[in-house]
Amino acid sequence: MSHLNYETRLPLGQATIDHFMGLPAHPTKCQATYVWIDGTGEHLRAKTRTINTKPQYLSEYPIWNYDGSSTGQADGLNSDRYLRPVAVFPDPFLGGLNVLVMCDTLDHEMKPTATNHRQMCAELMKKVSDQQPWFGMEQEYLIVDRDEHPLGWPKHGYPAPQGKYYCGIGADRAFGREVVETHYRACLHAGITIFGSNAEVTPGQWEFQIGTCLGIEMGDQLWMARYILHRVAEQFGVCVSLDPKPRVTMGDWNGAGCHTNFSTIDMRRPDGLETIIAAMEGLKKTHSEAMKVYDPNGGHDNLRRLTGRHETSQADQFSWGIANRACSVRIPRQVADEGRGYLEDRRPSSNCDPYLVTAMIVKSVLIN
Image 1: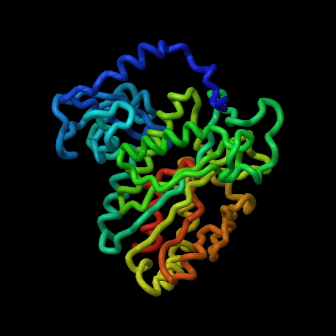
Image 2: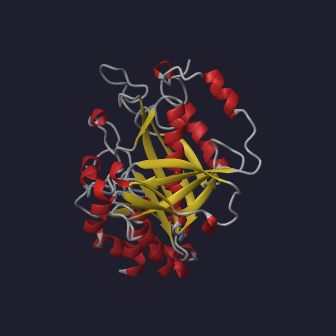
Image 3: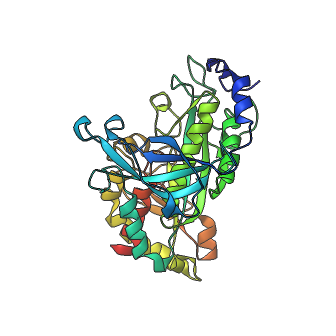
């Protein structure tokens, strides 16, 4: 029996849905679903339009508009905001010629809205392109019912203590695998560089990894992978929480982060470990600034997670170490042994904006 709460779904006429979704995709027309970040800096919105002939190039996708007063990005007296396509992915839900379009959000003067950090990030990545900055991000999340109760948790009380859930196998320790496997397959279809997935320490908590991605591609791919995850969960009648420390998990449970792996061409060369260690100085100098942008609420979300317990560092102190998961930045044991590779910034929260995180790391290591 599945752990997903199927009985909470409304009777949507599944046979009718299956019939029409089973029809072959249109041979020439393209359904383009435009996806964007709303005024929270955390949640995504989307809407779809028909394009008579699928564009061959990104620049051929039209700029579109939306009601910014309904997404926290404008007031009603001047509500129109613009969507500028920045990346295109095959649509795993509709198939055929249909696509998902990641978009910038622009105000009435065609300037980035307050929660649109992509343009800034792209400019920074262009400045350091000679260093070929590689990123990988490890997205942790919690599968919850629509009442925000974690999947697999009893409605009253708590599940058995953590320990058996990490990479767990079995009905008493893995909750929501259907969502995870469907999401994985959908990301592969969409051309997203998904590296892997695993069950995490808290029951109902999972992780997927995106990368290796070059520069601005990291933010584009993680945001679209999040969109696909929310859509997959929606089809199973459950939700996904990116809260780094939901209220119900405030006891002896691990929070959720978005650990970010970073490497430059110098770090990947023989003796690159010296460059990796040298980068710690820049990361230390910008620690306070980084903590303010590593979650969408100015650092307040991370204060609940980064307590020095549950494999985290303390929010007000910068630290680094080899194979130490209680540090701000970890150098993996294999990297230390081989003398080259990458570093892992463990500070970003699960609900971080990857454009802000990757830009902050570049500023800290390569520009400051």
